[in-house]
Image (cartoon, rainbow, N blue to C red; front, side):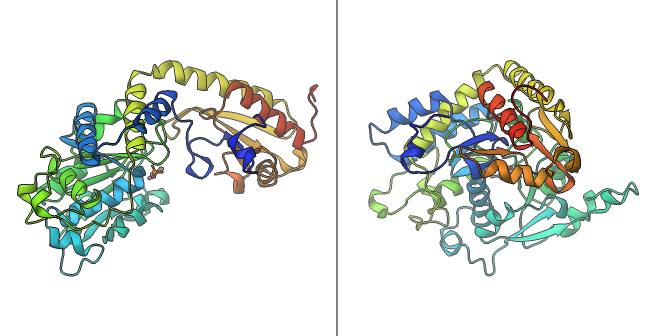
Length: 407
Ligand SMILES: *Cc1c(COP(=O)(O)O)cnc(C)c1O
């Protein structure tokens, strides 16, 4: 919250982030270890395929998967994963993507797992086939998806099964993997925001997932534009072939064998559907450094700090007329989060009005807005310093006409 930021030079207001790791306001605070590694990476040239091969080894080590790849965000990982499931090591199919005429291109997924990030799967050329219903919301005891529905939907045209992981959303991943594997189809898991806990790095692979996508710019706190794809070596090989810049003539095409075995390809692949999702050496190295620091971090201490910050914000806001606070610290939250209910009449502003006013300040103050239409907003401690948390409280109070000296 100083005036000498690079953003001030550009005339762009900074954001005080009480909303958590949201891409549209800059994601997470990149770790100093990652910044330092990026700076060092910028000093030399390196062959990107060599770097991806080293990244693959490191990702395999920490996830328990056979191989790994550094992608352009978790969304990029999903797109590349879909492309790999569709094309494998067939350079003809890969060259035609996203055109998938007469190729198995269907990705089966539960209707309740559909999100805006599906677009990443479709960008590779996939057609999404929905299964299940929304019956669990009817209160009849019915589940959203039954195992037989996957089996029924998988056929000749199926390239993969997709699963967007949330701990409260069924069906259990191991069951999904079993059904898919019985039909010879891989399972791609979107686990973008599921780190921490650290154990989740390997959990999805242990359940049987063939490819797992993590965001590098959320809990890992690596460069914003990075992601991780961990999974089966043959699928990662296909990812590499469709992502790396492959402009080369066969006589001198010499990719690192442990990432991409040239002998398995009928010829040099063309630039693939993944080529627009470039990952630079600086970002790649920064992600690996962030991953190491993420593994070394004492997550219990971090969570304790988040909880203390959330408690302090909740206590300070609870004293404001028209506001009432609760702390959500359950399965649906990555971090303990303060949920603030606004009684518009007593507070003098609605939740939506307050949220919008805060966003228009300089610096902009972003609080979690998922509940504004129901009269609530949220304060996440994840991306705040203690000082910023106090500032957020001060701005909320000021906007409700409550001074610094108490109410
Ligand atoms: C954030 C998120 C993504 C996208 O991750 P990026 O690293 O920003 O590309 C995909 N899926 C889910 C469920 C997410 O929460």
